[in-house]
View 1 (cartoon, rainbow, N blue to C red):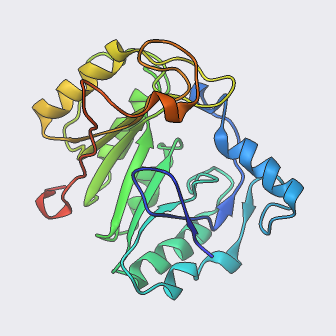
View 2 (cartoon, helix red, strand yellow):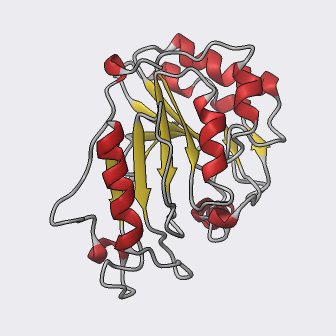
Length: 249
């Protein structure tokens, strides 16, 4: 079954692929890797291989069983565009999305280089939101241009974990920006001075801004449980969502 989640910006997760491999600094403390090992130890279906990349065709039809419109985060435990996931399997995933227009699908990748080539021969369904991770300047920012080359109802950035000041961003054609700090025992701190310029640039560009969490390190740079650190920024929570009807690609 697709699974309810505590991820603030989605409703359920759908994992037709599990497992991944590290490609950048944002992967250093991967939550999915830790969770996959735990699920393997518990004998959970789909995690027999731990965090090794695994295609699970038996999960492909899970969204078809749900009639209520739902926002799905696709492959929270992997990367749909991992280099070892063949185009033929990605095609099957997108076929399910096309057959369930009542749902919204959010896809996030660090393998942005695959996007222009794959979608050069495919039409992206209107109910798919496509995003890339932007954790730093070296690995993250170049992904934005790859994303911008794809026609999508919603293009979004997951700036999590935010590891440094990103400086000036080109947010042209970017509809939504999610920002968050890292969590876990080895989490790296995030500074408010890195977050505020992103928020200001979103306001100028018209991109919706969603502040997900401080993570393990609070705004005061004290390490504690992430729930205690909360989600407040400038005295309020920021949970803006993009409007697909206003998107002009």
